[in-house]
Image 1 (cartoon, one colour):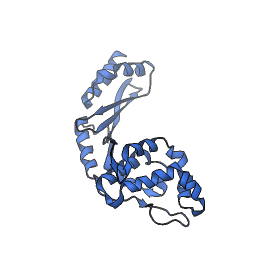
Image 2 (tube, helix red, strand yellow):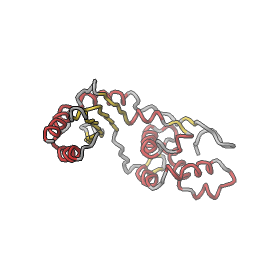
Image 3 (tube, rainbow, N blue to C red):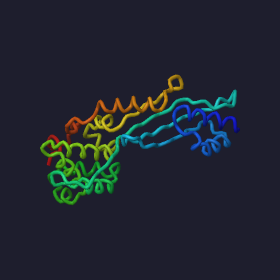
Image 4 (cartoon, rainbow, N blue to C red):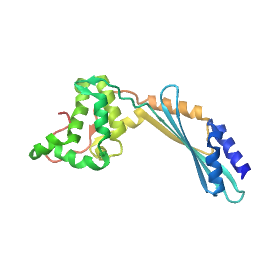
Length: 226
């Protein structure tokens, strides 16, 4: 077992991570005969980005040895929401309000109500509708800082929620993050993979734009500007 553990630790080191930091976890996985071992690490980079690395090892039952199948690298820009006010909207307060909403569960009905003129009372009292309106107030007059924070808030809270059924947010994925999976035949050092992903992410950097409306509900106006 010690030889198996040592080999995996050495492989982790070769990629560019600190293998010894994961030795206890690896020993436990090998001890229990796990067919796959996934070594994960999150590190903060000097440029402020976060780097998530997942190394996937599989066992060869003929030899009893573990070998690395692939590894995935995910880079994300820092999501910082300072105590500033733009177009009358407090960025930090808006972030805290969005944090208290279950966007996967509560969004759809509120969104439909937003365009129903017979539900003015619900619209006035809906925290979700108020948040959506304030998001668009942030970017009033195409304010660059307002658009930047609006897009970061949507990236953090609205990706992979029902919101994307109505608005295209795909441009935000490459703007604030990038990821790639490397196969066993092509395993660059982590530093090289990181540079490649940052370069890819920078291609989608700040371009002022409004999310494209994908679908309109009956009787709704175009866009979501209040």
